[in-house]
Length: 175
Image (cartoon, rainbow, N blue to C red; front, side, top):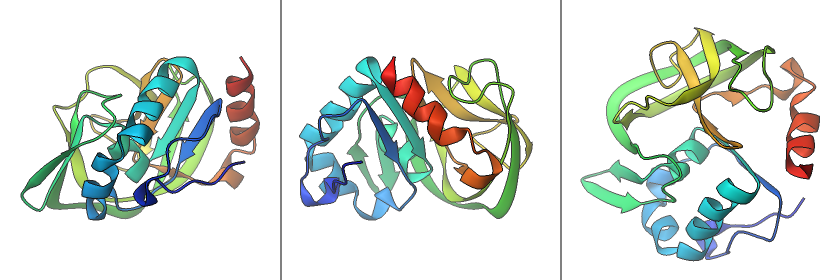
């Protein structure tokens, strides 16, 4: 594991996989957008490795973040913009099941939580990694927009609900 801080100007470390946890990228959007080494590295890793992001990580993988009257470019892995709104999703518990398009947890029941004030525009019409049984997710009963071996989800996965998550991430990175 290699820690790094893109808001401090750190590039993406040389790695095979990255986990982008939650957070508030809208509060640091200018610093993130200015760090093109990180954003370009993230987009490249999306083609060459594994990228998994939760909530703020999902937003960072979008084309841009629109918040507080400004729009900041992000990594562009997903073509949608993450748009901050007054509409709140959560805090709530999430129950979901990995879809066939989920490269980490196909068919696996998972639990987690979500809390976000953003949505994606336009609504993605691509593959989704989770069918949501409880929670809002990205929308239309799904969460975990997926391209290649990259997934961004509003759900913060509770790792103890799915002990195979971390080994699946490591195995995906080894391919």
